[in-house]
Length: 101
Length: 393
Ligand code: SF4
Ligand code: SF4
Image 1 (cartoon, rainbow over the protein chains, first blue to last red):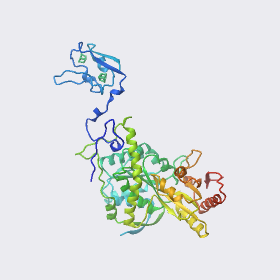
Image 2: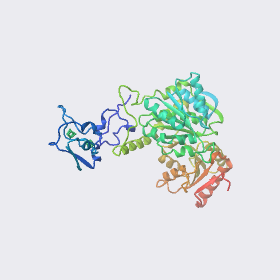
Image 3: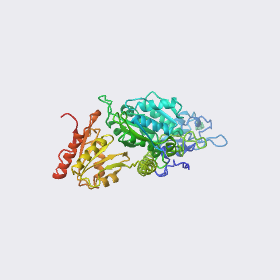
Image 4: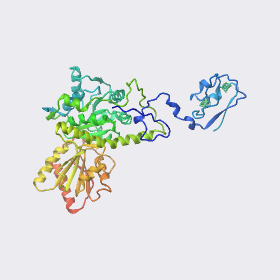
């Protein structure tokens, strides 16, 4: 009988439950890896200045600028934003400022 | 029905591989293991196996190909020696930590330098902490039997670790001795089908193998890997019991030779045990209570069992065919003494490094070790702990 591999990549998984050899059995699991705690500086979205030009979201290496159903950007996903500052560099309207985390 | 034959250790191992009929063999030739893939390649050419044989360009590639194949769901075997094993080093750890039960016939040879093609144990001893199970065998029969058992041990769901079948270069690999072989269908039934819980070629249940493992999960994976090595001890004994039912040949974690009432004993690995048993026999004829332990399973190390076996011994010599260059003693010595520490403290233990680079081991040498042990047992005075025999002083 083959055993079913239990996916166990949650941050509180114990050694007894973790998948042997680090095998990953589920797609899209990068989301479970909360890279937000790597951040030392954080982007601040200045909504009044934002024109919704949508230049920022494609450059984010961590897909941390969510876009809603109407095609508008929303608040940063701070669980995954690493604070790289690329979005702030790209924004033509100074609508993103980097500050201390 | 067993068949009697006369084979060298390498031939015997190649025959075992033919009978196992693995999905993949990837190997690169190096003395004294070359004959294993050489004989096996002829089985492939003659259509005697269904194996995909990959003649790679180096041992690093051999082990990499084995890892890829085993991850894909293929039962995989390779063979190497000395510097070939050293070139596999990086991949040895990856096979073990990825929990891929590759089987490796490790034909023991001195690790360069200076360059030497003869037997000692410096190659596999260096890989003792790579996460591989290590089985050692005294002769062609044990090399054959261990290879068949290795496949079943490594693939057990509670283990999932790669296994080395270690035996002495030339002494065992090239010397032709009598052997009892199993029938092909008996081996086939014994090892069964390789049916891993998850593998890359399983289209219904896709997986990724070998991902980056950061601070948040690496430690848990290593802890689980350590548990697999603990589980291996039980599985090795279960597989041995099943093998005994089939063949009548009994295997344990180590062999105890005249140990019941032994007062002086040596612990030794591989072919030297044969020489040493002759010495024990002649000492016993003279009334000396001598005994011997031959390690079969070095990883996992049988700590509790060896303490139990040695408890009544007064003086003990651990023989290492490999030096550790730690200015304190060989690897087997270190493992035996740390097993005894706190569990059987009264025993006087000394270490001998011997046979490096294929230096011949004679019964006279072993007799002198027992003489010294008898003296230690009598006087209680140990003297030098870290010794050599067979080197010109
Ligand atoms: S700072 Fe970097 S990671 Fe964070 S939202 Fe901007 S581009 Fe993405
Ligand atoms: S680039 Fe600046 S202005 Fe454009 S959507 Fe992003 S934050 Fe708004």
